[in-house]
Length: 574
Image (spheres, rainbow, N blue to C red):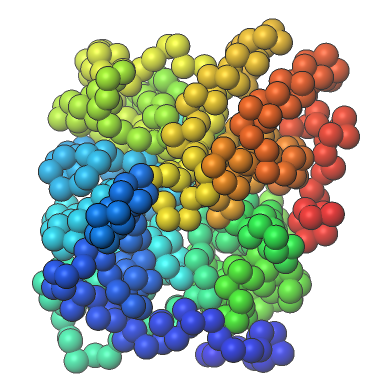
C-alpha cells in the first residue's frame, strides 16, 4: 500500500473476493459494455454485478413477482436502481423537470425517491434504458459516479435554509470535498457517455487517493452546521462540523468513525458513534479529507468485509493512532475541538424566512416517495412548482424537499400549488414527520422485512398510542429498516426497528432526539403487534414518571429499561 509506514496495522489473511474484482476491473470498467449488449439476460453477470455499483447502480428485481416468474420459468425481472450524486442535495428546477420526465417515461414505478443520502433514486430502469438514463443525467449536469461501491459516496450537507450565507459556504465545501475524493478513472464516461473521454486518452488511469483497489468498504462524508444535526453525523465515516465566528465559517471539527450497519449473530459488528479528532482551518480541509480516506484505504480490513468500515479500523488500531497518522499525512496537527451543540435533528416542515428575506418551504414527503396516487398527486405538484420556481430545491437527508429562495411575490402561488396537490397537509402529526424508513420490499434484495410499506400504518398506530396517553402533539424519533445494513438510520432512533423476517423485527430503544446516542436491543425477533403493545406500556410509564422535558429515549435509560450505549464495542452487545 502506498503511503503506509506501519505494516503491523494491516489485517493479514486471504483477501475478500471484492478485492480481486476491483483489482481485475481495469479501473472499474470490467466488461460492463459487453454486458449491456447481451440481450439474453436483463441483468449483469459475474463481476459486473458488483462493478456497476461504482457507477451508482444496484441490480434489483421486483420481489413481489419473483415466485410467479419462476413458475413461468422466467428469470427475475432484472432492473437497476440508480442513485444520483448531488452534494448537499441541491438541484435546480430545470434539472428536476428533466428527472421527472425520465421517471415517467423510462422507469417501471414512475416515481422519484428522495433518499437518506440527500439525493434522488430512480427505481425500475430496464437494461435498454440504462445508457439513456446516464446520458440524460449528464445532459443536465448530473452524474451517479461513486454513489455506491467502495468509494466516498454522496457528500451530505445541512440543508439549513435560514442561515443562507453560512449554508452557501458549507455547501461549497461539500461540493469541493465530493470532487476531491471522486474516482479519477475515465470508466464512467467511456461506458455510459459514448466515449466522452478526457483530453489525453493516452494518459494511464491513476487513483492517487483511492488506489487501484479503491477503499476496503463504502465511505460516507458529511458537512454539518450546528445546531442542526439533520444529516446524522454519527451515521458517517467522516464529518466536518462547521465552526463559525460572527456568521462566518472559520473551520471544522473533524469527526471520524461513525456507522450504523451490523450483522445479526456477529458480535464483532455494531453501530458506532464518530470520534471528534479536533479542529482544522478551512485551508486544510481537502488535505484532511484525503488523509482520513487514505489512512482508511491503507489500514482498513480487506480480509473481512464485515469489519472493513472505518469504525472498525479506529477500534482496532486506536483512535489516537489513527489521528496521529492523519496528522502525519497532512503535516498539520489538529487543534483542540471548538465547542458546538446539536439541539435539533429533523427538518422544520412548512414556511421559514431566511436572513436574505427569501422564503423557504419544506415539504414533508413520507418515505421520500414522490409519486401520484389516489390520496395526493405529489409528483405532479412538485413538477408544477418546478415549472414556475425561480430559486433552487434541496433534498434533505430526512427524505423531504425544500423549495428554497422564494421571493415574497411568488410565495402565495407556490403555497396554493402545494395545497392543491397534497404537498402541504395540516393533518400530518409531529410523530409522522419524525419517522423514517428505508425502501426494503419489493425492490431491495437485502430486505428481510417490510419498512417503507410498513411505516405509514404503524405510525398511525403509534399516533394512537400518544393520543391515548394525552400527548398527541409530541413525538418520539422512530425509524424502521428492513435489514441490519442501516439505510433507514434506525440505530440513531429513540425507537428503532430492524427487520428479521416477515413481520418480525428487533426492537431497539434509547437513542436521543438529537442523534448522538446509539440505542440498545430491548426485544429480539418480535411481531409488530407485540412491539406496539410494548411501546404502549413504555409510553404510559414515560408520561407518568418522566422528568420535565425528558425525551422518551432519555427516560428509558434513566428508568433502567435499557442501559446506555457509551462505547459500542463494549456496550452494544453486553
